[in-house]
Image 1 (cartoon, one colour):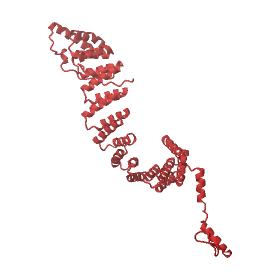
Image 2 (image 1 turned 90 degrees about the horizontal axis):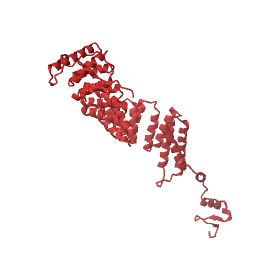
Image 3 (image 1 turned 90 degrees about the vertical axis):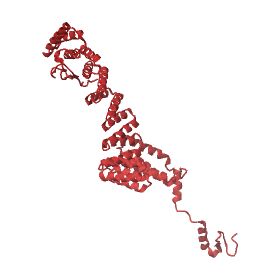
Image 4 (image 1 turned 180 degrees about the vertical axis):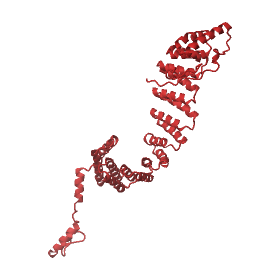
Length: 445
């Protein structure tokens, strides 16, 4: 795993310049009162031992000042063996270990500090730095979790821990951290957005929508949050009414964006608000007249409203701009299909005239597939719809019978007999209105 640059702040008894420290270690101001070479810990020692401690400290500190860290270590280490309670000396010794890259010894020195002062953030930071150098990733992470626990409002620490979680792809860790931050910053919409992103990666779209709703509530003018929420409702939660609600708010913020108006129109159509959908789509077309796909979308809405001829006129407009617009042909097939089934009998029987329309719909779907340029999902849709309508084609018997009915029908029998009666009137043949034929002076029977 690639190492992050570890944030570390080493509290030392004297100010150490950046040129002395290894990368990642930054010195703080010297501890107050350390110039006395001893720390008042409440521990009682005799003067002889005190003189010995002062001598050891003096030796170690002199070597430390001239940056002979290896030579400083024996005296400082002996000091801690005689008096393990002096935190400042432990810091000085730990620094010498770090400078000589004696990581194990440096780790023990910082742990000695933490046994006496468990909340000593500087020691924890430098211990985390050592774990990072030793590639002890788990200990590095746990140490920074403790640092953030002690300093929850320190943005530098929090961001570093967040980066560690992100590097490890620890979604739960990121979520815990961000939720804690959100509790402390109830008005921060950005944190809610980050939480929503994590829920999205986890596949929890309901929680994602809830977090985005909170983000929108905290920052109602943020167009990106509104867009993300609207698309989530539309694409993942299948809630077109909610999508339309959010897109409606978005059109107020970005009133000149044709894409927003177009998506607003789609959501309105899907939620059954067809009149409003047409208004939104026409507004989109006003803002982007060259976007011919909107012609087809308006046609779809008109088809939903049962205005099939008007819908087809919009398809013709689209094809007048681009005769090879495959999407328009798919939409045309949909319109013809809806028009045909609208004429079906109550029992589902499709009349002959409706079958002719369905055959035309099949041709439109096939034409769309021939043209290409469709997204794969639309190609599959067009293919499925064309195959689905195949059984509704007219049979040869139906075509023959329809053609026979379409011929000029023979005149009625009464008309034929009337003509015969008039033609043969001199032969005594006559036609009776009752339908019989006979001779003059005789009964028709």
